[in-house]
Picture 1: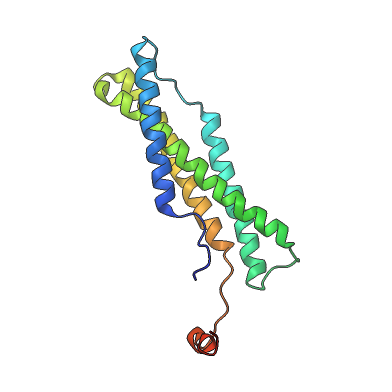
Picture 2: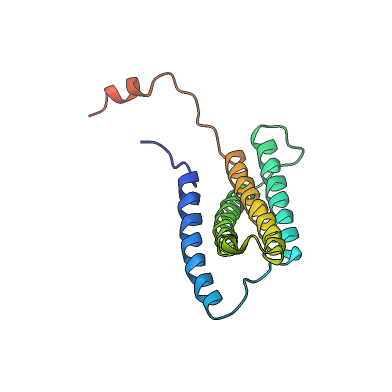
Length: 162
């Protein structure tokens, strides 16, 4: 039996695709009502970048302690919370990736209009930072992984048991 491997990239892709489809349907409905695609604020961009950096720093601290190079001791609860924080950041980044991609897809048919092109650039910046948030969460998850102990051969231990 293999131990749990945590959050997988395929899960993030599925979450992003579901968010993309739902976001595209909602935005199509919104735009059909003579509304404009909402412009994302730059504060959201800064918050996502700050969150991604904080998650990476927390994961690096867990990695240092796990490898025996940490300056101070760390409780197992804090390490577990860091793992969950990394997974939550990855899932949040996947949802935001789908949302910003759906908004960008709505603007693509009118890309030849200068005002729509100007609205597309902030969406693409948010999309890029959302992808980086996913990556930061997955990297943190890998930094929190405990390496399995090395055994000679697990099959030899199981031969005597019935």
